[in-house]
Length: 354
Image 1 (tube, rainbow, N blue to C red):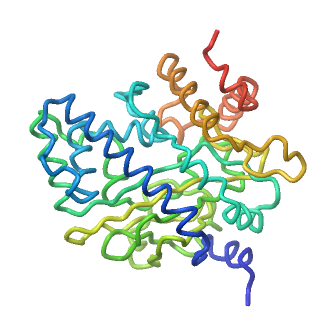
Image 2 (spheres, rainbow, N blue to C red; image 1 turned 180 degrees about the horizontal axis):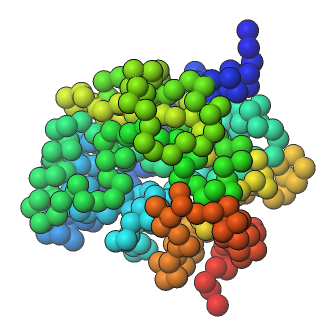
């Protein structure tokens, strides 16, 4: 039987069943993040003078989240997932809101069982990429509720840049294309972690086995991908590992009321280019220099605050469209500039402070 690494290298993806303990890894994040989402919902409802339902706590989580999307006019996603949304020209950074980089998320990122599996795949020197995503795929009825709330405020959620990617169907893509070109040779792994079950009805991942072997491919992709895709239904506790160049998508959530909630975190070998050097990554595991590992979630969240403060003031070095048009030498210059500016957590904490 092939090893995990052999399966991963051959197929470009790997599903590890029951890899994470539900009680220590999944449920704490699920509870804490639900409390965060509920707090944000109430804040936006009050700010926009939308009456908070009398039985708000009795609404389902996707109903409450849909109200958050509508009341925030979609911009709550800027706060929850700035990695993509900072490319939106109307990006809003609101430091007055509860920090979305919560300790329970960080603890999942550095979970020892997760890092053990990553070490098996890419070796003992593992960096946590600054790229991560929160996705909650909603049903048609829940998306309709979000649209109704937004419409009452004169907003059109379809105009929000990455809205569909984050809460609706995700089209075919490979993660590598979102990183500036000097990262195309890096060994980057996406650890896709479901918080709820992911089924073919509520929007599980679909992959093209072996597609990572063809190198970086930009859109448009062949129409035949839908027929070639392999669906990956998974349960909480499972992990899907994806090569950065593996073509994948997610199915539309066709269920009546179900939803699919997942996070994906990226990892790579220490010293390689992450593709997004202007946001903060960190050392997750190092056998050669264990003292460099970051284990304090509050330092990590403050690194993000300093970074987003700085980028909101100074801007980012490229646009999302500019990433695919950028030359290799320009990419290397951007990465070197940011590696020199912020080589470690302390330098991210000092960013923009004087």
